[in-house]
Image 1 (cartoon, rainbow, N blue to C red):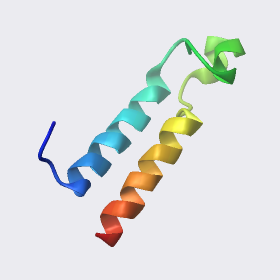
Image 2: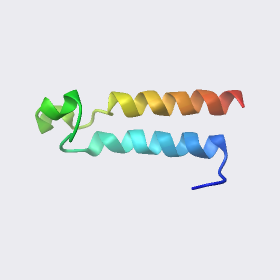
Image 3: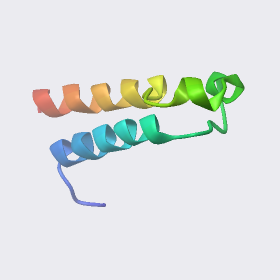
Image 4: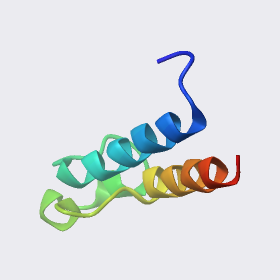
Length: 61
């Protein structure tokens, strides 16, 4: 959504990252070569990194 705060963006990034733990099949990247059983419950590392970046920026501003 446009016009939100950095804190709102951090919350959205965290929610998005957490939702990747329920993905049953990765469509891109190295995770696409991993069997779905091994992906279950694991947050995508790239999504986790972005969520942490947004959370850090939100804590600073």
